[in-house]
Amino acid sequence: MSSIKNGHNFGILSALAAGTFTLFSAPAFAEGECDNTPACVMDLRSIVGDIDPSTDPHIGTLMAQSAIRMDEAMDAGIEATGEGPYYGNKYYGDKPDELKALDCTEYLIEILRKGFDAAGHADLIASIIKQAVQDSGSEGLKGIVLLQTLQDQLGWEGVYFNPDVQNPGDRDDEHPYTAYVASSKGTYYGLNVNKDRSLLDYNPSSQDGTELNEDSISDADDIPFGLIAARGGRHMAVIIDGDVYEVHWSKGAASADLITAVPLEEWGWMSGVILTPPSE
Image 1 (cartoon, rainbow, N blue to C red):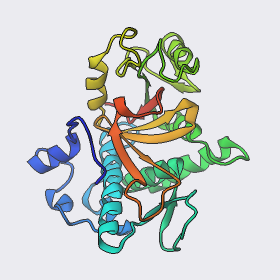
Image 2 (cartoon, rainbow, N blue to C red):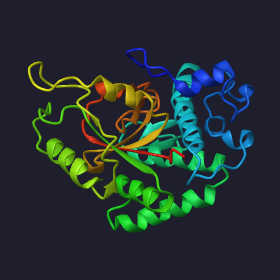
Image 3 (cartoon, rainbow, N blue to C red):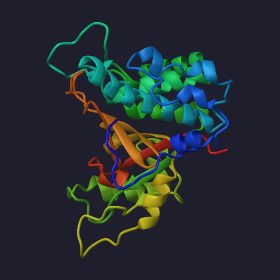
Image 4 (cartoon, rainbow, N blue to C red):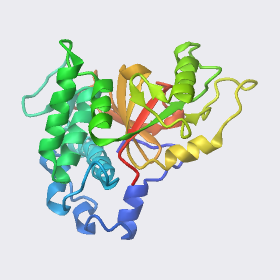
């Protein structure tokens, strides 16, 4: 499995292991039960009843588990056969027909499809994706439009994040500007964000500048699942219990680095938005 630093905990997995999470039956997630096949990664439908994705936050738990299984499937496949079930769609090596190509947006779509299917709403997410493709225009599906469609149709909630508002490490004015827009207007590239819930200054770029905001690190750890759009949607990822999972599209099926995970405060894409399922 991709390494997780700084001792971040897996809230979902911990609850499952302790037997305190009642949505799933424990045997379905027993260690070693999921092999390296996509069918196993995505077999959640058989173990959960219908969930309303517009009101029930447990839809995020399904998608988090799907994302984690995809990561585990890569590692299991590489160990067993030398390659996992996925490869980056910008990889220039062999691309076996039986494997699935991913980029950062297709990664989110895969997670969304399987999570919604497990909740009994495969048709709904197919409709949302279709609408997002249509609204994206002739250049193809845009990740930020996918998030806008989820928010428009299901009321998902936006949280702005920025590791150092006033002193961005790359000195790009985009970061302080988007922080200003998020705090004053409650928007980020067409998405609504909660002006009172931003994650700010959790990784200051200079010792004598911004003061570290440890509360934002804790708040990020408390997000069980969210979809990320960074830099206006130039890159997409997911966050699970404070750790960012992403796909590197130039990696092949034999690379354990195709899907990686690091704490948000160590993630290099800096500012963006986290879109989470409804909290109530």
